[in-house]
Image (tube, rainbow over all chains, first blue to last red):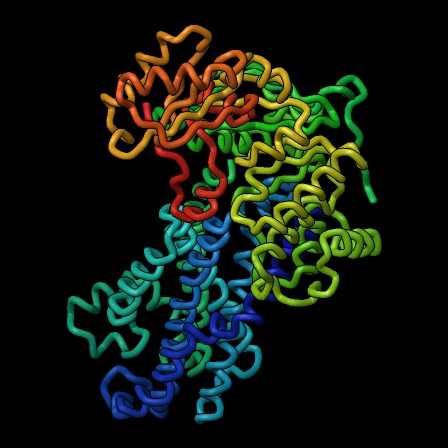
Length: 261
Length: 347
């Protein structure tokens, strides 16, 4: 089937590009690693505040938010990569061949998802060395990686849309930088909802980042009466990500078809 | 390796364009109803100043852009209904060199083959063959980022040939290359055309090569075809020698001096046409050599100083000048490459 083989060839191309430019793999990792090494130590007393689950260190608590922060910045690289192909003419060169149009987008998206999984594994691994292990074990890690990969996909739709619309890598980075911290700080990525000011609590309850972090956190800290997380926490996250994914991928497909035809 | 044959019905015609119109969303009329045909195996030149609509036309012919109206058939297939079939039959080289610099030369060619659904041993053999042809065997496993400009261009050309296209579209394939590489690329193209019978549709600023290699050409200006025919026919059409006059200091760019000179020239018998050129004018006259003393005498009387006089039989450059009011200057083009402005548009 050409869709499958075309996608795999373009996936391999993206992988080669990634491996030959390791900076692309590590670029979005810098901030999360700094957070993991310093931020969690700096604010270690946070875990004593009301609303934080008893018995967990702040690092245990924050690692979910840090993984998410990486997924967030990493997904913005998808948009810049497609801008590169648009600008260099490589996209046109591909379009002048009978290659499946969907494969161009799929190869890109899948390689981005793969990148996020590798990066998240690095963060979980580093956290493990520093003393945080998931209460739900290997299976928990796998589910967490699937959540973050889906989140990355849904979120990369935003950067792909911006990239396809503006054809400017600078704009993608600019908007990404502008969005990152407000969205992170108005969520439960780094602190529990209980310690947020009232208005932030309201924002946080609408912020998709909160739902995604909560699901990963449920897997790291465990689902029990102490943490207050249940299987429902994880299912809700899939629902929220699915909803966002449909919107962002819909926009991406629409804009991509405009570029392609 | 998989070959796709032309429809037997359309064996002779590689490209058939009728009343092609392209109007962009913002109302820009890039192509205003052009018609032309290219025979199979032909080396066809598509010339015109920047902004004339050449690239737009190439994009439509190569299925990258949807036309507004008209009919376009490539290799016997309709560009809109049979785009996928056309894409298997054509090779396309864009104006800018387009290769993936993160991949090696070999990987670039393999990827291009994969995009054409070629696989396995056949593809590997074909890629090795091409690497040899474009003299990149030694650098095949080096990343293209480390290639010189000429090597990148050769790799780009090779990547358009992986699937053995019957029809090659080339948009300015030698612009920005050093003379040696340019000559090499032209000789590849000649070989492809003459030995393998590949139809070549080319836009270029290099008129000497067009004159030498193209069987026929069309000149596009402001979205319309202003001339078409064989180089010999087009030159013959001018029907006169070209006398190029450069004005001496003080009169260059001075409208009144130029106007005065043109007035005098119009009065001379034997002059068939006068066209403005940078720093002077080009006068067309039968038996140009005999006209020179008359011109000098007339100018002397009117106190117009000439800095240079040249007489030549008409070239494609003269044909181009006659039809578009502009000259093509590849040397300048090479220097200003990247600035995006290759011609000043005078009206």
